[in-house]
Structure formats: C-alpha cells, structure tokens
Image 1 (cartoon, rainbow, N blue to C red):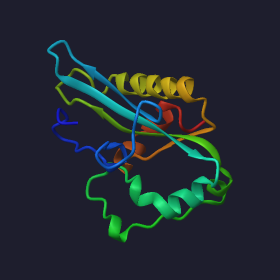
Image 2: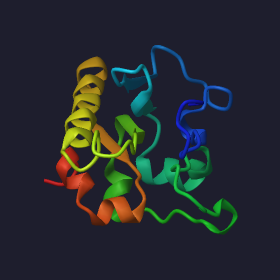
Image 3: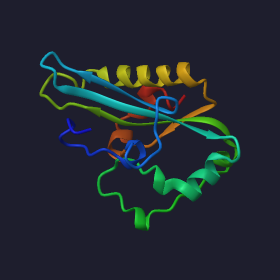
Image 4: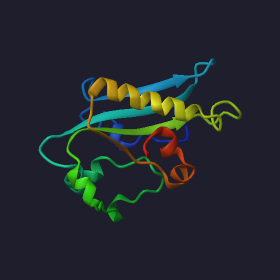
Length: 153
C-alpha cells in the first residue's frame, strides 16, 4: 500500500508475488475526512484440504511472512505445535492491520479493535472458514491486541 508511510506491504498480501484474486483475498481500508488512508487490513483464504496448518507452515512459511520489522527469514524456522497438525480445511489468514498515527485521532481509542473485528466478521461471512490465524509484532501482542480482536478466548 503506497499510502502507508511507515509500514511496507508484506509479501503475504502482495498481489505481485501471491496469486490473489476476488475469490481468495480482500483488503479493507478506511480513509479520514481529508481522504488520507487511516486504516488497512487484509485477509486471504487458504484451503488446506490436502494437508494441515503445521505441514503448510513448515513447508511454506516463507510465502506468508508477517510484516514484522527486521524479520530475518534466512534465520527463521517454523515449528508446529501438536494442535497445528490437527488444523485442516479452510483457513482465513488475517494481517496487514495498520492504523494511522495522526495525533489524537485513531489510536488508543479502541477503533482498531472494532475495525479488525469487522474484517474478521466479513471474512467469516464471505468464506465460512474452519479457522482464522494471523501474526503480529510482539510489542502489539503484549498490549493485548490479539485478545481484543477476538483471537484468544
């Protein structure tokens, strides 16, 4: 997304790298009253009918790198938990959640949580998936964003 000044587009949702189309991916974006981009999130569908999430991520995790600053994919490895080997079917991969940092407007007021939940709801209604997963920076996770989005129950 060229309008996101501080967060580069991750390879997972880059249509120049990935085979993304209306049937397997979408973006939700928001603009402020001035027309400036103030929010993004992306969702894509993975159909793992011939495998499981553990196998998929072990073999293909470099195709879905999270947009985390300074991530070194050459030194990265994926180790599946036992439960990841039991996850099969249609998966929603959710990422690229970004909020503008215009002072006092969009952050620290709960808006990002509401928008992220809207994105997940839209994806579930569109694809009726079996599971949802995503990655986020540790600093964001430690602030409880995953729980507020509805990932942890």
